[in-house]
Length: 220
Image 1 (cartoon, rainbow, N blue to C red):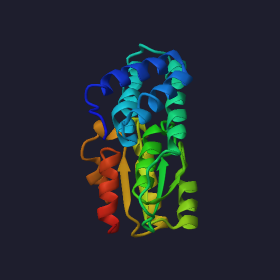
Image 2 (image 1 turned 90 degrees about the vertical axis):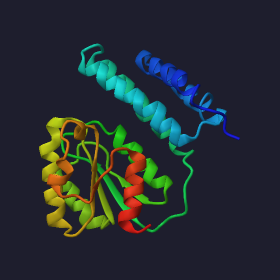
Image 3 (image 1 turned 135 degrees about the vertical axis):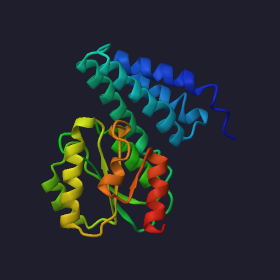
Image 4 (image 1 turned 30 degrees about the vertical axis):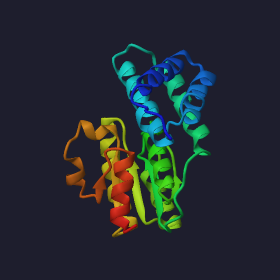
């Protein structure tokens, strides 16, 4: 039986964030595994209610010049390490036969959200090809021709990369006409309605919504 997590998660999140800011990789991983997974907290909850909000707080502290670029990079590196460490613990549904290509747009260096979305898609049985950060749209097009995915998911975090998102969508449509395209990322908070102007298949506001929409779109 999974214990009640509502009372413990805020404390776990605060301690994990403190470990990030201190650059303590060992403590950050210990908290997620020992006080998280081994204490009965579902992995999906760790992703969405510990790692993701902590990363949002790191971004806020950086934007408000409370922490330096170096500190932000250090904390983000710990988040990436945590996701990589937790990857082997992902509970996976049986393969559903659908391939999803996940990529950050050109210039976008923030890949934690896209990596998390990839993990959630994989847990749902999708065959995920995660390209990571800063993928030029021409090279994305090559990958689309090689892989021929059933869905393309594009991530953008910083609002000044939204023009790159538009270029990526346009290029993907030219290379793979009819391919369903999903978009997501923090940048959409500053550009409400952008997904409508892009005329994409759907906008995933978080990893869970992305998976649900992908299942609906692809008939899974």
